[in-house]
Image 1: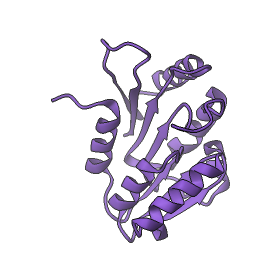
Image 2: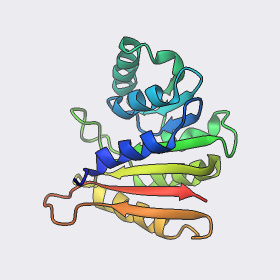
Image 3: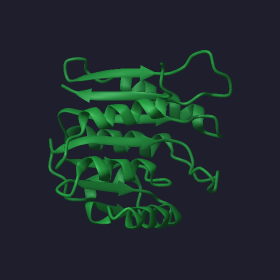
Image 4: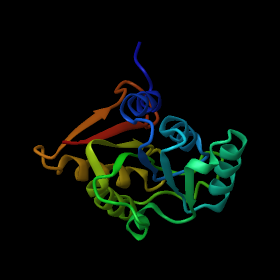
Length: 187
């Protein structure tokens, strides 16, 4: 049975991230990925989460506290392009997750942008351990979404094959700008 791009993202995370590892949720949103990552990394692991919207950080903090997983997570109310402002060692991150677009049930005028997303991607790739993943859910059915989609695809296609494998996972017979997954694995 084929999985949606989002479910496939979660499958990849569950198969590749190990207990005790460090991961980044580059777009915390409603906290679904943050919660999953906190569960996967276990009590010795660490999740660093970024979001520019305070309501996203608050909602995620509440969900983590209710699940007793908040001690494993550092939430930062800033953009993912600021990842280099925090003490993260090169080659130490097992996975980085992005959900591009806007906060579901939030202000649809606040969206991720091509410039900050590409800047963030350029900064997180050196942080990945060998075999580490960057998983980008590309939602592009909003104003500015098509430009970000093209920028991210162009960036991913330009990555050197000797250093990275890049997979695009998508349903191609769906209408209304179906989201797709870009998975980047560091060799």
